[in-house]
Image 1: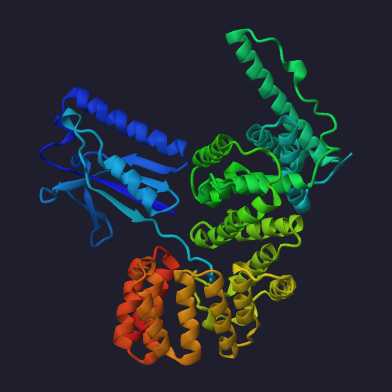
Image 2: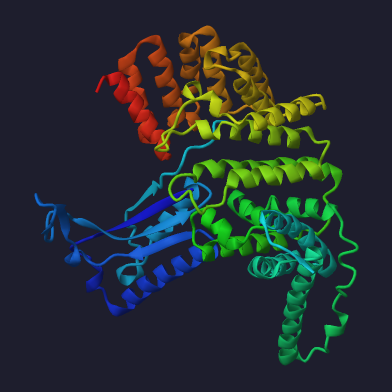
Amino acid sequence: MKYILMMNTMKSGHGVPGWPGKDLQAHIGFMIDINKELHERGELVSAEGLSFPDLAKLVRAGKDGRPLTDGIFPESKEFLAGFWIIDVDGPQRAYEIAAKVSAAPGPGGAPLNMPIEVRPIMSGPPPEML
Amino acid sequence: MSKKWDASSEHLLRELAPQVIGAIARRFRDFSSAEDAVQEAMIAAFTQWPQEGVPENPRGWLIQVACRRMTDQVRSEIARRERETAVAAEAESLPPTLGIEADMDPDDTLILLFMCCHPALTPSSAIALTLRAIGGLTTAEIANSFLIPEATMAQRISRAKQNIKASGAPFRLPSPHERIERLPAVLHALYLIFSEGYASSVGSRLQRLDLAREAIRLTRNTKTLLPDNAEVTGLLALMLLTDARRAARTGPDEELIPLDKQDRGLWDRVEISEGVELLTAALANGTVGLYQLQAAIAAVHDEAERAEDTDWPQILALYELLKRVSPGPMVALNHAIAVAMVHGPAEGLQLLRALQSDARLASHYRLAAVRAHLLERTGDYEAAVKHYRVAAARTASIPERNYLIMQAARLAGD
């Protein structure tokens, strides 16, 4: 079963850019290790980190079908920092991985306990049997 | 002299894979390396044979290439150790590869099958390893059919083999008692390959391996290895009787068509008659198990010329039996449908109320979907719409979700 794990982080306050170098290093190392572990277990489909929201644009089609872009959105407190797509045996394993990711180290090495949104990826229908 | 490559050569190559792995694993006493070596030999064959023709002795060719890989591997391992600890050359003591072909044993494939479906493995890794070692598929083909990267699939397979190694499983046939105990896991793995064939059938269907067909082929082979086992035969019958409806169960836009609305002219008569024949033989054989009963239910559906001709009392009787042989929430749910078909929707709904307290079902989309369907039959459209929508929100299948929201829309008159 495939799941997407979406990692949301706060836009302001304890944002990653303001951390001390040692803490940043630990955080980055942690993420590299997670990806390595998921790969070695044969569970990783893909993992992507996203740019900071500074580069985000909201796009809509204009009347002539051309893109209308909108800038940064001060109203949203959280933003999607990255995601994983995993292929695992069931929801319990997906939650286990999400909990691990959630506890990534933050300033001073303390676990961040970030909210990780876990959602099944849609598939085809099961066969007509039990 | 070599033969021209055609569709039958590909089949031959895949059929040879487990036999060759078995023989080499037995000779070298190393299943994991033997499996890797044969995978490399398979890839070499898939590259060379279509161009150069199929060798006169394909089995001998595969054994030779795989053994060369094995010896290379052992030699480099010895060289590495010599550098480190100056161990005396062991190359002389390598098992001779001559005669491997002569003492191939049909039981080898059976040993492999039990190995690949070892209890130490998770279902997804057992399936992957089974497809590669028994099915003779390449890692790329397996990865592609599960829509995951090849490197990830390669890791999954090598990890599965590490787990088998760590469990200390010897390369020999489990005792008759053990075989009986472990057969359900083998059959379950084959069953999962079959259902994966449906579940992953959305999206880029072209260019992808037909896993349902692979599962049928593997189960057919398993039946050859265990001809007297009624459950193996039952599983093969179930797959054929289910697969027979494949062309009818989706419309041109891949939308789901429920059993009672399917064009039965599209059902595969050849598969149905083979399934029925197998089932009849299995049922005559003795103890009735889970797969035979499911196959029997599928056969009752398949034998009805029109949906309204379906022998529901017969299906209900089979579900009563199934509830005893293999109790579970999904069986209970299907039993409730059969009750509704025989005794009316109100009685079916009554049973659903009892199932609501089962934690495994309470938030499952199928409970909501069945409830919606039965409510519709009682004429309570408003409640039916509500439950169709609840079910739609809970399913992880796109065609099923589309089907359910369309049902709700139809009843809501939108």
